[in-house]
Amino acid sequence: MKEAARGVKRWLLVLALLALGIFLCFWRLPIEKQNVADHLRGFPEASTQMHGLRVYILAVVFLLPALAAFFYATSTVLNRWLTREFLHAFLICFGGILAVYMLLDFSSKESAFEESGSVLFGAWRFYSEYSPALLTLLLPFGMLLSVLFCVGKVSRSRELVAALQSGVSMWRLMLPIYGFGVLATLFCIACNFHWAPQSEGMKSANLDEVRGKTGIQATDLVFFYPKGRRMWKVANFPREFDQGVPLTGVEVTTLHKDGSLASRLYADEAKWSSSLGQWQFSRVELADHHKNQAPIFVNPMEPYIKDDWNETPAQIIQQGAGAQYLGVPDLTGMMKNSVKEEWQQSESARYATQWHYRWALPLSCFVYVLVAIPLALFVTRRASGASIAVAIGSAIFMVLLTSVLLALGESENMNPALAVWLPIGIFTALGFLLMLRRNAGRALWPIFGK
Image (cartoon, rainbow, N blue to C red; front, side, top):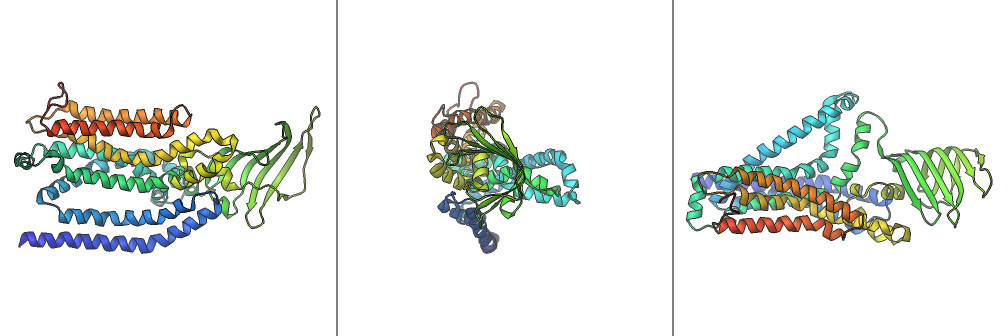
């Protein structure tokens, strides 16, 4: 009777999470559709198909808890026990990492939150916007520590020894933890598809808005428009440029066909009217340059209008800002459109490297699980502390190796795909090799024992 009642509770949990996921889909997906439409109006060169996937990805994220609960309800008693043990470990380890990060970050931004009038409201507003990037950053390390804590703990239990003696392989026994690794990877892929890079790029602007100031998305941008031979320099690029907030500290340099200086425009503010297709500059000074002559400075009547300049603020921010702040849809659009220009061929490696990195970074969740399980798993009376140290050291080395290879890929010194996927391949192979040796009852290597 007790088992039947527990089975009913498990299925009620599945239904409750499914209902919650459906509710979130009906509430959030129409908003995301509108966000996609607004983004495409501001960034016409972005990939329409890839941005359209954002809606479906959000739906998958909302339904992931129900899917996890379904697998829990249909699994064996041993798998359910290990699932509960891992959840306890995950709440402790990931909660601890998150709490430490939040305390350190909050202390550095407390004065900014106070300017909002309410510290708690300001903090909630900032961290809710930054949460996709924060979760993508911390979740892989949370998975690593959770696996080490959970597997090390259950290795001492009699249930684990009994299961192994009954003929169950270590692969099969650790299946629930591998499943958690897959779910964490799927969640990180969803975040890193668009929302995590975007929230990282908007971090400074969000903090400005919490202070009650105009949110500045980027500063000191440089953009070259080859068709008009114009070099733009923008001191402050506002977040809501598409809502009439002007760019400030604008300098536009025009070149002759031979590359010599033709003219230079200085303006305190610049606005783009998408409906009229024109730029409006305020407080302008023009400098007309002629060869072997002193420049002629002119202050034209305001507003100074240029209706034959086709570049848009979206082009300036997208190509002038760092590729690390662009998601998969925007990077796809940049790779298809912008790098067609001869002058931008050197940028193709940077976009390609970051595009591959959007997919590879989330896989570190599963890679850490692959490496950590055999290092934390033991069937002897004493655990090897060296194995735990190796697991943590491997994660640190993977981060360092990834950073170095990313720099090589972006600088065209290495194939972008190879630079991004090489660390994933190396540590995935290492994880499988260690687990094969552990499952066969062999020592991982002599100095660490079994």
